[in-house]
Amino acid sequence: MSEFDTVIHGGRVVTASDVFDADIGITNGRIAAIAEKIAGGDRRIDAGGKLVMPGGIEAHAHIAQESSSGLMSADDYYSGSVSAAFGGNSSFIPFAAQHRGQSIADVIATYDGRAAPNSVLDYSYHLIISDPSVSVLEELPGVFARGITSFKVFMTYDLMNIGDGGMLDILTVAKTHGALTMVHAENNDMVKWMNKRFAAAGLTAPKYHAVSRPELAEEEAINRAVSLAKLVDAALFIVHVSTAGGAAIVQREKLAGTKLFAETCPQYLALTRNDLDRPGMEGAKFICSPPVRDVATQTALWRHVQSGTFESVSSDHAPYRFDASGKFANGTDAPYPKIANGMPGIAMRLPYLFSEGVGKGRITLQQFVALSSSNAAKTFGMAKKGTIAPGFDADIAIWDPEMRRTATLADQHDNMDYTPFEGMEIEGWPLLTMNRGDVIVENGELKAERGRGRFVARNPVDLTGKPGYRAKEFDPAQNFGAEIAP
Ligand code: DUC
Ligand code: ZN
Ligand code: ZN
Image (cartoon, rainbow, N blue to C red):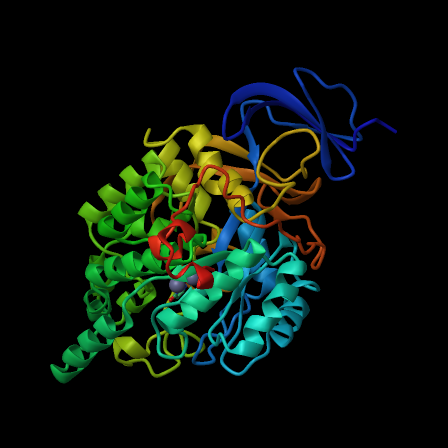
């Protein structure tokens, strides 16, 4: 018996700060040693000529989740985690969604029943709250105590939008417990007004989806969400930023010290609204909200990826098949507002970001690791994940930086019947994915058992370096209003 269960040798190790040649010794699922040369190991994995990186942490995915209209996503915790692993991820944080009238305890129990027997990867949940009633707010401390330290709210969709007052209530409870509130920021009334006008003009094809959700709707809502969070000085994470204007607000507010985090997604870097204008109903494959925009937006978002506006590039994997179980649940000629919202991408997030980011010289290897793994671990409180260091979970992906592939459905290993990335040329591909020392995927083969993944209890959000904002109305020195300060 060797001191190490596994030794990965001969590879080039990448962390968010460094690139160096080293061997890694793994014992009991943890990284036990990093050295120039490590002998022994019950199993030795040759990583010569390869990159050895922290496995991705997918922080935005809709898995075994019903939409507000009751449509189930195509991927469950088995297919979703398998697809994530094929795409170089070692863990993920999908959503547990409360729909109106449901107790939070029931929601969490439901998702435990979906995830625990099925996931091949470690997982946690962000709790979606659609109904911040007094009883729901009272349940939240128990959720934090279980290590679910982030949740998502919506400013759009009639059945999800919690209103500004609801957001202030949630932000305030979150602040008390050190939780992070994530927000889908789009102005609901702007979108509904646009929909009404398109419907009146008989314009219902998928391509109108893109223009029905204007850039201004996102920019206005991001600005409002940030103002709400600042009023109570709570931490906020803007999900799926799709506009240059929205990203600029995030950048400005981060500079000002606001307790703000954000992500964008590959689809906003890779696709444009022209994709919604493909022949027939093909455009439905590209319907997601917020919508994909244009080339100028892609260029601007890449600049923000490069310069630190975003903690992460997440997939927003929201899989609905191109059939009656998904996109066409309301008929094959449904008007765009009745077509399921979302696209798959959990297996393409990292290959796309590597190829277009590292491969094209837009970001460094270290930035790739930060954007794909390390920042998510820090932001969402996964204390033992997100880097390669002694004592951390052996969550590792070995990549061939030179492997070329043409993106195609067969490589996704999900339950979908299309990938929006079909045909894209990719350079750099994950060959092996490991979670807590177990090999999950190796050379195109799944090696893991269904249900081996474990729930990860997460820490409160780390706000070090973010001084925040103090509304003068709540400043005791101003002598008015401070009595009700949050
Ligand atoms: N928001 C998401 O984050 N994902 C899918 C659809 C949506 O509105
Ligand atoms: Zn959203
Ligand atoms: Zn989403």
